[in-house]
Image (cartoon, rainbow, N blue to C red):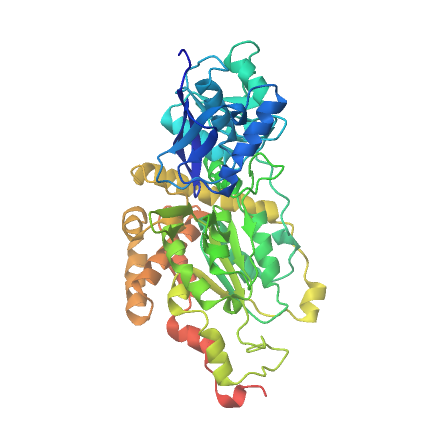
Length: 530
């Protein structure tokens, strides 16, 4: 008959933050008119039939609805659920190829993704960078997608990004009438996001600032305990002012997460370290990730940045317990019936809490009104296993009015940031030599085996920590976390070996179980305010 009945073009499906290659097959056969899309598509995908019909009609091209034949679109593999509107472009081109309305081209050399508007222009999609990474991995040389997504996708090297404004423009390009200039490789500039607050703007709290510097240098989790109004939230916000700018690989990781969640908005990439602060009423799905159509949660949106949980005991218990696994592994696993999705979640947890429900237990200015039972119940909302995963735990005391009036604000933000950067550079150099190709960026990411292999103690420090460990009630996990914090302290002091001073300081930042009870919950009834 001379009519081409079949075509196959490439597109992609987002599964979490990863893209998967999808083959869009089109078959046109004799029969009563029908335009059917099969392959487990969702509502947005089924509605693409109307968008494609209108777009082609408005371009003076014969649409599927004018075919007196049966048009079947199959999205393969057929057992994978397909979501979103990014298939519009590939379905339209597959139909045009199968109906011989455009010239054949090498369909294996180009991947298509884009949503069609009713007049044939292309709207931006979510996950463009993730799809570009798929094209790079699959060695597909060309990627055609909406022009609004081109800068984002062109961050990925090794592929040619074709920025498309309209379907007719893409057809002209494929038929080599008017070629589209490829998008230049995106030059990622790392402008630091304006921090909420600079650490130099905070008066006093020298010990807390020291703990913040150590946490930033090693990527350690931090808990601040103290009465209301002592500056815990300000300190947490100020940590962004001393974190080093992210490397290109980290920018790609973070941008991929935000792109898959549709949160890039006007930005083409995320060039700063995220700071996420979910509210206490947030659900576990909102924080950890998941849902009917799985999306990254707050812990993934904080990847390579900071997750701040203010008023830690006020969060749901099941949510706090759900953080335990991501804090250890650096990823959030969402269990599904057919497969499990993994979201990156390598974040710094910075948490703040009051010592009791009224907030004034141990305060020098106000009496606590809580009973001993109320204090104990409040503190038990944060479980021991979760506390065991927090490397640095400090008390933030109240400053007196005299201190607030006389304390001079230091101008040392740049100095602190330089020390943090220097410590991280020492870590990178050490991991490059000894980590045998493992992807480790900070001391906090070391596992127990890595600690034994990469951290060197002086003879005195080794004997000292053995004696301290025998007398304390810290767990094996706590022991290794003390060593990691001590290594960060040594890195800040530009020392190759970890000495006794670093061990003692690291141990002082970790509340043992008995110290935790004494500090937060236990006190004689006579000391309890009424």
